[in-house]
Length: 267
Image (tube, rainbow, N blue to C red; front, side, top):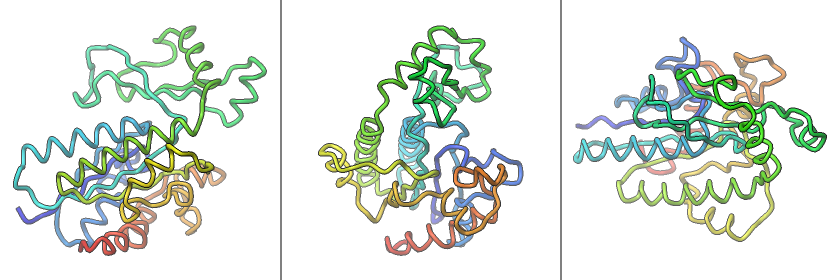
């Protein structure tokens, strides 16, 4: 086959099912148009966390490579999300769930920006879970234990821990892609928090070739769209973490992703 596979994964910022008009109209679809051929596999899912994004990307890409050993070029776009999001394992017989998602659900210890102040005042920090279409809510899980777990996660939360683990996972993802001759670009949805230098963080970060990653602390898809004046679906006051429409997706593909692909000598 001569047509490339254009793969993307991320959270709601890349999810073509976030709005009906985004179906087949995300930046990945625009890349296909720019290349003039190929087909798109979009595994982005609203509410995703970074572990889920990397894990399901490995699953999808390995599955595709093993079932199509002589396949054409693969180009993967990996959009990362909020580091405050983590995961829980809830056994539920995989009702309405894709096998690759297994029994993971996204857990966010707070849905508020002032969670630290509230936590220290022993007030509710409003934990959130995202279980897709499986019906699990704060009411159907144990509220008491989820509250305790969320407060414990919040108390011990460190962006350094999350970033080190993220880059160690990305280093392994890079090795997987090199071994399987997969081209990839990694970028943030919302900008990542700026951190100071730290040995393990710098060590794993240096393992990711600069040609394959857009600086996570300096650039974010949402911030770029806001800076270009695009209007999100969300209230304008949330534009730097807003969800953007087809016009922004296409401009992002034309002005950011395609030039980076060309620098990687891929046309």
